[in-house]
Each structure stands twice: as structure tokens, then as C-alpha cells.
Length: 451
Ligand code: ZDR
Image 1 (cartoon, rainbow, N blue to C red):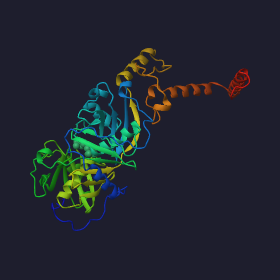
Image 2: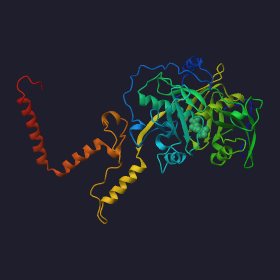
Image 3: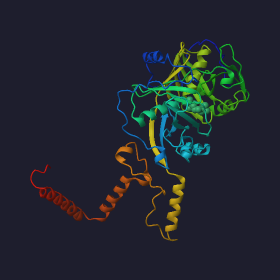
Image 4: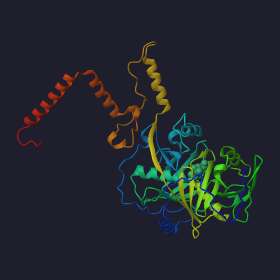
């Protein structure tokens, strides 16, 4: 039986730490500095002029990953924020951005599958701006649905943009999302601070059928599977239900997560957060994400949780929220009403998914070239469109971007074939002749040639 934590009750004592995961908390002065900077930011939904971007002292582009227009293949980068992982696709310069990569919800589901695909909690597209920002973000959950916002995802997007464009600390992006303008900033320690905007506390904005209660946000008690929970709800561009409990470790997430997600009180379904108060500035959470299931972290969820818990009188306006993947620092600024989130975002790896049609064609060619019963001598190169020549030393510094036609792999294969088919004596003789002919060439150029 799950005990109900009475909403709005004053905190008596911090229960013992049960799922504590240590991590790099960000010092308060840094957050205060952010508040000062964020003071002038206009409310979400208002079309803003693209603000002047503060470009840090770090040099301009060093590495530029291939653009969608250059390949029929699908180049992606995988990033994670506290173990909430995403595939990042850069369609900022695509000729037809909305059609870029042929993304359908079925394709998203397949890409996110951890066994039949790359594996991720979601797919994020960087698109050209439409509402005055620098760019636009679209996010798709692992089930192919499209939420309005994603806190961990936008930190990952900021880190990705900085890596691709060669930007450094101090860089701020004005990013348009379905939830309005969101403003991430790269911090000196490599983590990302995000101005997440003001929370939505009206029931129809969340959306929820729960009425606004004494705490000033949607509240109520819900029956699930014979158990009763006191809950509060808040929107951060996507819906969240927050359920304070004495011990999150005791919650059967697989049982109650889906029941809350699909509860009729949340007509657009909801993200689900069980939260335990460790101290007034330290909360412990477990997350069930709409469209993704149990995840290691949830940025918008941590923001909604702090807003709900503070409204209920259960924590301060600024707190550390420990998620299974690590901590986030959240501050609900009193003067601006906006929520600021600090947390990490890390590059995991880059990859390329070959165009399925090119793969199919190449297999058909290989099959046609192989007499039945005999093995193929050489596999046909995959893909009918060879694509432009690339300089591996420049574009492949984060990993091979075109493994199916990799010039260095070809060169390595030729060298290996030479080594396999040549005796040591012959190799020594080749090297000696080569040295001799190069030396002779230098002397032939006459005196004064600079070695
Ligand atoms: C929880 C989330 N990953 C984040 O970090 O904010 C957002 C993903 C979108 C979520 N699953 C939803 O609202 O459907």
C-alpha cells in the first residue's frame, strides 16, 4: 500500500537517502548570475528578435559534420543528458527540412529501438527558424509521438550545436520549440543552463481535468488500481503529474507509471514523477516518461517537480533534484517567474545509417553478379550514389561518417593486401629502391635544393 503524502504538509524530517547519486552540483553564485542575465528575457510565446549571440573566446568551426544535402544516408549524433539519450539530426541547411531524413513516426520508433535500431529515448531535429529564433527544435519520443518540449533534449541539442559549429562557453542559442522560445547557454564547465520559461499552471494549459487547488496549481486525489494518490500537475510545454511519496524506492514504477500516463485526468497523457523530499533544497525523483517509459532523467519533469513541490510548500525555490541518471539544479526565479535548469549533456558517438534503398540495390547487384553455388569474389560497393569525395582527416575526426565508402579503409585494405602477398625480402627491396630513387631525384635537381 502506498502511503499518501498530504499535499502542502510541512516537512518534518528528511527520510534516509535511498537512491542517492552524487554529482556535480552547480554553485549558487553561478545561478544567481544567470538570473541577472535572464531578467530581460521576454515571456514565452512572444516573437523575439534574435538576440545578439554572445560568442565565447573559443575558436570558430573546427569540425563540420556533413549536411543532409550531401548524403542520401542518415548521419546522426548520439548525445545523452543524465542517461536520457537522443539521436540528433542536423537539418538546418536541408533543402526541404521538414522532409529531411524521411522521418516518419515508424522510422523514429525503429531508430529508437535498442535492439533493432540505434537505441534512444527520442530523436531531435535541428531545423531552420520560423519564428525569429536562430533555429527550431522538433523532438520525437521513442514511440513516435511529438511532445512540445524536452529539457534534457534541449541541453543535448545545445551541446551538439556547439560541437558541430565549434562554439565555446558563453554561447547562447534562441531556439523555437512548440512550447515557445527556449534559451540554452553553454557554461564554462561544459554543462548547459537552460531558461525553460514560465511553467503552465492552468488546467487547460497542462492539460488536465484536475482543478486548481489551494497551492495555485491543478491538484487532486486520483484512484489507480485500488490505490489513492494525492497529486499535483504542471506544464513545461508538456504535461507532468507530480506525486510526493515518502520513499520513491518503494514505488512500483512499471505498474503505476502507465496507469498515470493514460489516466483520464490527463487527456494528452502525461509524464509521471514520484518524488521524495530529502531536505527542503534536495529532492529525489523517479520518472515515467510519456511515450518512452521509465527513463534515467527528465529535464522538463524536474522543472515541473520543483514548481509543484514548492507550490505545495514542500521545498525551496532552488533545489537539487536527484534523478536515477544524476542531479539537476533547478531554480524557479521569483521575480521573472521563469524556471532555470542546469545540467550536463554529453556526446556519445556519431554514426551513419545507410540509405535502405541503396543497401537493397547493392545487394541486388551482388546477387545478380554471383553465379548460383559460387561465392561472390568481391562485394559490390553499397549505394548507387557515390557522394562527394571527402577528406577523412577533416570530417571524420569524431568517427567515420561514411563507412560504406571510406577512403582510408580502402587504403588500409590495399596496404594489408600488399603485406599479405609480399615476402619480407621483397618488402625490404621495395623500400630500398624507393629510398634510392627519391634520394637520386633530389640530387638530380642540382645544388641548392632544400632538403
Ligand atoms: C522528459 C523529457 N525527456 C525531458 O527531459 O524533458 C521530455 C521528453 C518528452 C516527454 N516524453 C513528453 O512530454 O512526451
